[in-house]
Each structure stands twice: as structure tokens, then as C-alpha cells.
Image 1 (cartoon, helix red, strand yellow):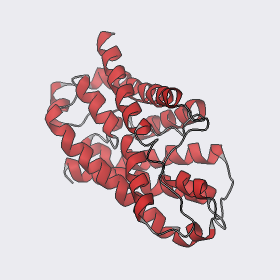
Image 2 (cartoon, one colour):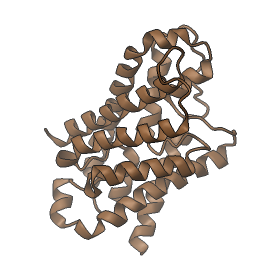
Image 3 (cartoon, one colour):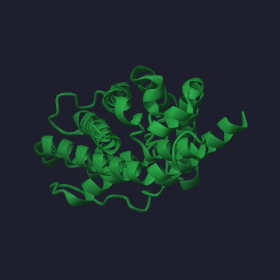
Length: 244
């Protein structure tokens, strides 16, 4: 499996399972409806585990455009490879979210709350305020990328960079999963902790395209926050890591 295929499949699995977790928790007549925040944060952590475990040996398992940008900023990943990785991640996230919708299509049509339907695909603020919401996404992604850089720093070599194997997989699937769980539990209550542009934008596009009986708008006026915030957070993490 080549690097871009690994990023596509790893991100696709992440979003298939992650969107499915949201749908199972939210949609009418789903068996796990109203299970709650612990279910969601643990589930997303397990979804990250699967994506990293599959993609890690082949691409380093970035499965997140912000991770690719942050690693490049830190000098641990070739800038020339960033566009391909990012495109593969967005395509994988779109595919995974679409497949999750297809699995839960009947449940989507049984659900009448448009906001809840959108929330299974993409994030939104608990209390609206663009600057506060942006800060939340910056902070959560800063923690993610800084910890990945810090924990993997001792093992990064020139060969790792050449082979593009540095990524979330560098610290292992389980540690990354636990890191995502604690970010969600500690910092995710404000915006739903996208901390990944592909995780938010691609499923938002799926939401806009697929037929759902009681679907409302896709909240495009907010969509820039979970895209720009993670990129800023990852770049800041790289700057701080290099400074230290």
C-alpha cells in the first residue's frame, strides 16, 4: 500500500467509524441513542486507533491535514508531499462519511431535528462566538500536534523524513487514541473538537449533498472555524516545538 492510499484508507476508516458513532448516539431508533459524551469521546478515540493502526506502517498515519502541515512546519515532513496527503485525507473523509450515512440512511429519515442531523456529520459551537470557537480549535489541535512531535521527536531521523513515516503512528495507535480521548473530554465541550479540517469539511459536504428528509442547512458560515483553527494550532505547535 502506498502512502496516499494509506492516508485515504486510514482517514476513510476514521470517518466511517466516527460519523457512525455520532449517528448511533444521535439518530432516532438507533440502539445507542442518547448514550452521551463519554460514548462519543471513547468512540472517536477507538476510531483514531483503527485509522492509525492501518495507515501507520505505510504513511505514518497523518489522517489529518493539520498534522501534515504541522509536521512540515517542524521540518519533520517534506512540504512537497503535503498536497497529496491532504487531498487523500479529504477524499478519504468524504468517502467514510458517505458510507456511514448510507448505513444509517433510514435512521436519518426518522430524525426530525435538523441540528442534530448536521451534528452527526460536522462540528458546531455549544455557545456561538467565532473568536472563542476558533481559539478552542487552535488549542485542541496545538495539544494534539505538540504531543505527537514531543513524543516522537527522539525517534525521528533523516530516513524517517525521506520515507514520510513520521505521523500519528510514530507514537503508536493506542497512545494517539488516548490523546484524542483526553482532548475530547477536556477541551471538546465547546466546539465538538474537530481538530482536523478533513474531519469537518468533508462530512459537511456530504451533508449538503445527500438526501435526508428533515435536513436543514449545512452551517457554512461556521465551516471556516474547524478548518482554519486546526491549521493555526498545528503551526503554533511546530513553532513552539522547534523553539524548545
